[in-house]
Amino acid sequence: MTGTPASRATSATRLSVSHITAQNETNLLGTVHGGVVMTLVDSVAGVVAARHSGGPAVTASMDEMVFLVPVRVGDVVHFNAQVNWTGRSSMEVGVRITADRWDSVGPQVHVATAYLVFVAVDEEGKPREVPQVVPETDEDRRRLREAEIRRSHRLARRQAIIASREAPE
Image 1 (tube, rainbow, N blue to C red):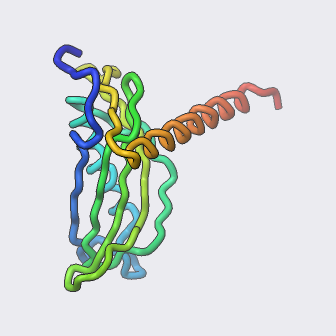
Image 2: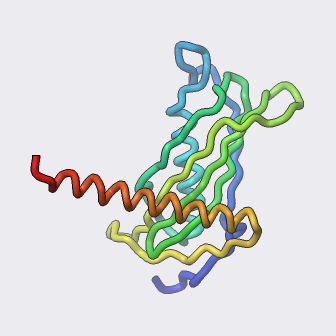
C-alpha cells in the first residue's frame, strides 16, 4: 500500500481508554457483564490496529480471556492496548484491563488481559500489508516474544483441527 511506512514504533499507536461502568451494564449478580468488557476490549484494540496499520482492520480472533476479579457498577475500567506483534497483514494487539472505584483513591486492580488478532483490509475487504512493529523497551520485547509463542500455538491448533477432520473415523 502506497504511503504505508515499513515499520512503526510500539509507542506510536498505544492507547489508553477509561470507562465508568453503569447500572445498565450489569448482570443478575450486580457485576458488569463480561460481554460489555469484551466489547470495549475489541473496540479499543480495533482503534490500535487501525492506527498501526493506517486503515481498516478487522478482528480475526481473540485468545482466551480470563477474568480475574469482577467489575462492579461504579468502577472505572481502564483499557491499555498496544500492538505486540505484526505479520504481513495481521497483528496481535494486547489489552490489559484494570479497574478502580470512581469515588475513592486506591490502587488499580488487574481485571483481565486479552490478546486479539486483527487483519488489515483494503477497500475490497482483502488483506493488505501492515508496518512491522518496532519494540522499544524490554517490556515491548517480552510482549513480542510471547506474542510469537501465542501465534505458533494458534497455528498448531488450527493444523491439528484440520488434521482431525481429515482423519478416518
